[in-house]
Length: 97
Image (tube, rainbow, N blue to C red; front, side, top):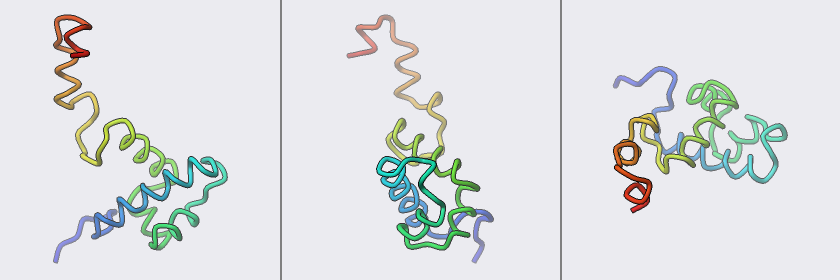
């Protein structure tokens, strides 16, 4: 079995990490939340958090991206079809519609 280097084999673990990190960041703040706190709450090893996201800032970035985009897809926000449609709208009224 081939696994991707630097990513947990379990995508559910990645989602749990971001889910619990989001909760902890909102509740306790970024500075007060440790990678160990995130790992414990997600039920993974600290090493898994680092392998998945590289740093606490990487986890925050993933949480922010999910909050803005609404999902975990690797497509950059500016390349999303719904945003491109807004850009191509003839008017603000059309974009809001």
